[in-house]
Length: 187
Image (cartoon, rainbow, N blue to C red):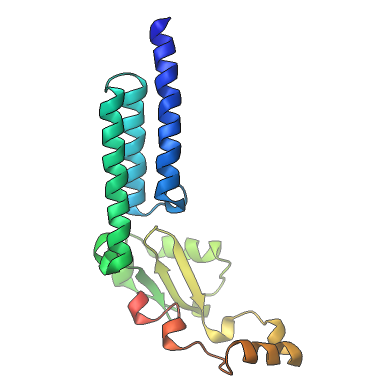
C-alpha cells in the first residue's frame, strides 16, 4: 500500500512539474512538432516514466527534466538570434511554378504521389496552380498559389473594399520583398 501511495504522489508531483516545464517552453512544445520539439517531448516522456515508477529518484529526474528544458530554451534562444537555419533546417521546395522539384522530393524522402496527396489536402486540383510548395521545418507542406489561381476577394469586385485595401497597403498591390513569404531568405 505504501508503494502505491508513493507512486501516486510521485505521479502527481511529476504532473505539476511537467505542467510548469511545458508552460515555460511555450506552445511549440505541444503544437506542431519540429525535430527538436519532438526530441524534447520524447525525452521528457521517458524521464517522467522513470520517475513515476521509481527507477530514478525524484531529485535525479527533476534535474534531468530541468536540463532538457534548459537545452530546449537554449535552442530557442539561439534560433531567435540567427542560428535557426543550422539548428532547425530550412524549408525544402518540392514544387515551383507548377513543376515538381525532384531534388527537393529526394531530400525529403518523398515521391510524387506524396506531393500530390499534400496538394489534394490543400484543396489543389491542378499542379499548374502552384507557385510554390515547401516542406516546412515541422514536416507540413505549405502551398502558395500562382496569382491567377488565387480566389477572388471582396476587394477584387467592390471598389470601396479595393480602396480600403490600397489604403491599408500604402497604395501597393504587391507586398515588398521583405513582406513576401516566398522571399529567398525565408527558404
